[in-house]
Length: 437
Ligand code: ASP
Image 1 (cartoon, rainbow, N blue to C red):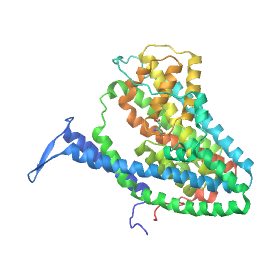
Image 2: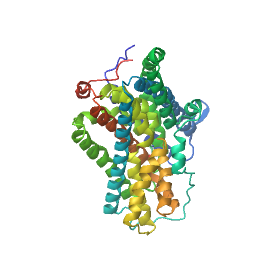
Image 3: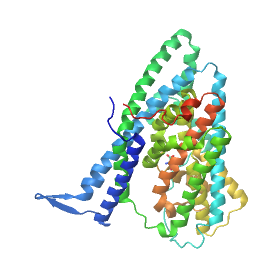
Image 4: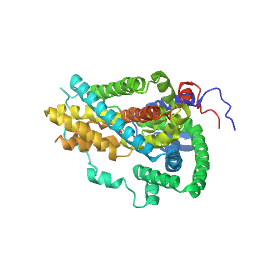
């Protein structure tokens, strides 16, 4: 089945996004802040908000996000089992694991350090007058010990039912190793998983082709309801976070791709566009796993052995964009409350934010929960989070795009160093174009 269109998928997603923003802004304008506006049509009276915003846009957007999440568990399980069971030597797995963990932690620490540096330079919270008596409900945050215990599944079926990514990864890796050790029986099971992998990749393709509609609905809903009243006071905070996100996402990643991987950064970014748009419109690294795996393997040429491990792992533990928001937010909140932080406090912020990202899943808004942990560590008022919520939605979208670009970047670096990256595919501008179904 071939889709007959002159636009490729990335362009269609971009067009859908622009249309969604236009339509959403139009509805925001006609509703003009009113809770509802009725229109009469052939004797029927219809609420615009009920029909479009809470109706069509909401339902369409949620179905899209649900379909993306639907792909995650089967995709991660099947491709990771295929990836690990095909390894000739188990020590490779140890190397891939330690290289990716090391790079994830290192890049997150760099991200938050840069964020604190620029936040101190631009002082977004100095002179800001905001009502401080806001309230923010702090979610329960697990201890570090609990985070490690929670990585191990006591029931793999339950782990899959709940979408516990780290537990699924550990189970799939062990299962893959067991297949590799099981001789002929293992080979038969492996063949089944290889076939399943082909089927799951087609499933991914089907959802990807419907994605422009989903992106349109998500954007239309968001821009109908988006309130930017707080922008005045939060303008500098917003711009500093955005600036550091771009700085890290383009400059730091570009440099690492070039210097550590010896790869062409422009080619890397060009191929990441589609997946970054997915992350931007869904605000969820987890929901972007399927697209990111398709991009890293199909377009960037990273072998499934590496990508099936690094991408889902990165979606859960690698959140450079989120760390950047936390760095700037900590400085902002300290400045608004007139609290001086010492160099040791900042070090603690770097450590806590880096560790916090390991135990939290890549879903919308989780960065604020992690920020609560960071603020508590350095004795800043957690209510401060209420100050920045007003502009967090747009920042969440942008930082998620940075988070998943970081996952793909590490995947390329690890792939290259393990001789698991096909340079011909990486350098071919048309490789893996998702135009056929
Ligand atoms: N939405 C982000 C992600 O899924 C996490 C966050 O920063 O809130 O990667």
